[in-house]
Amino acid sequence: MVVHEQETKRIANVRIAMNRIRGRNGVQVEDWNQKAGLSAGEHQNTKQTSNESQKQERSAKVYVTVYAKFTTEGILLPVQVVWEDGRSYEISRVTDIRRAASLKAGGSGMRYTCIVFGREVHLYYEGQNLWFMERKG
Image (cartoon, rainbow, N blue to C red):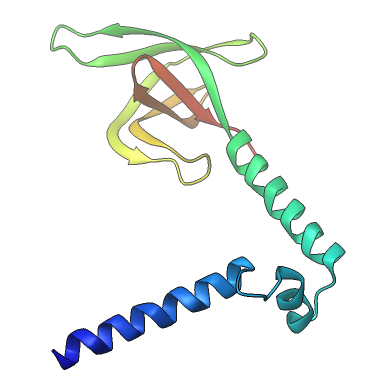
């Protein structure tokens, strides 16, 4: 019984703290910014910067058109990639196929390590006929 009461008090304290952070119970978000040494403008700039970086992270994923074939064993192999500007690249060889996540662009699926013009590139198959690549930079 004592443990349950302590847990209930702890949960109540966490809720009070969260409400203060959210700007309830008479404590405004601006007050928290002042305590942290940020003006309202600096706080907004911080939000804009984080939003811009999130957009850049999302824009690293480029959905592409892929022409592919199935082997007699039922393996899906990409043959050609069409980039977003319409340029077409022939895949000379697929060196590896494995389930993996794209850390740069976000998302996961089957990662095809391909050779295009003598360079190694990664092509991801998300399923539902969606293919994407990571944008450079």
